[in-house]
Image (tube, rainbow over all chains, first blue to last red; front, side):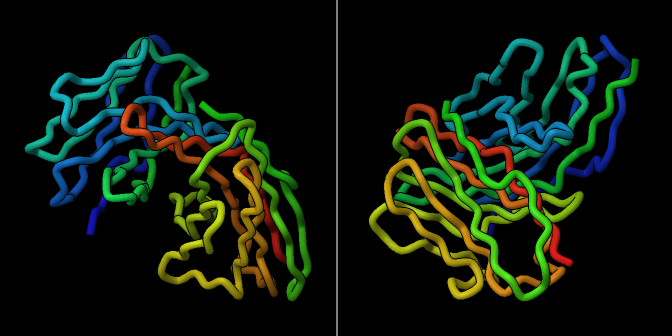
Length: 116
Length: 116
């Protein structure tokens, strides 16, 4: 069975600094997707970034980028130039792809606080 | 992406009663999902609801307790039946766009349920 582990329950970063959130996963699958979702206090889950396992190039979305290490089964999120609005719970998620199966496995989350 | 609304946004209910949560999407989607997120916890999938077929429930969740309807491609309901305080949680609806080009789930704002 797939598992997703986020080993940092809480983190804080100064505004404008860079922070990295870690995520590791365990799977025997070869085709899958990995995601980072953000859940601010308003609780709306927002997709931050997506990575297809077959792509070697790390995904980037503006200030957000990932370091995807497939062999190590690691998928960390880097937030550059942190902003107060980045304060939220961040969830790493794994999705198996193919054969009509689309089930997400979520990590336990990392609570990030950006300090002014 | 997809715009998803949920009703009610929150409710306080008495033990033994039932609550039906509605999920409306702004476009047609094949796959809809219902999650539970207990306070400070990660997301747990309750069931997958595809239009035209019975919902598929995850281990630990049963139809008698969480009946789901999916009458069309833009709407679904989840009922929490015979509620107890242990059912106090946030219930999230999500939709999947799985076309091999950008497989992603998008989430509604959630329904915060408190059972007294």
